[in-house]
Length: 231
Image (cartoon, rainbow, N blue to C red; front, side, top):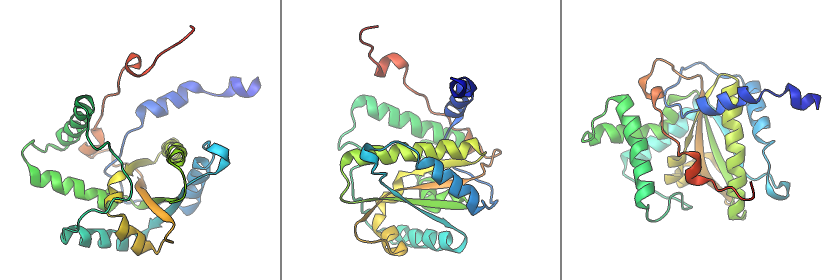
């Protein structure tokens, strides 16, 4: 009972409410010990049968710069995206398209990028492949033999990573776009064939003066996604 009483649920709720994708970082390095603590916390996430799916490949300094260079070359060559799993539905419903549009509008509005400025939008999207200049980039992979449910378990680990990082004053952004060039990442890191690249994560101290970090996206009201029975 004492452990329950000492837990500050309000503090956790604040972390959840304040969490957002950070797309501009300070160049300050992060000590390996801090990253290890964040990832150890992420691994405490639940998983079916305690399989603990997923691996985290952490890069900084020269190692990160070389990966970003490989990705930049792929973009410059207009290489066709190679995605090894389906991220979005094949066809977005009207409701989902509206959410997607609203998220993009919020981002470009914060950056002052006009609706018709396709070049600026492409350049902003390309920043995904530079890990938004974060001092640490993480490549997340999963064993190809894992079932679809294991992606859910890996997602819980990622959310634990985000909140653990935020509780320490760091910012994060998940980078699903990294899977568009999974083959480049796979080859560059020399990953074994059984490893499938899922996404990237940018990690670092947020640049609080950058307008892009003012981007706020709405969340659906509780009654739109929740049903209660027997209450």
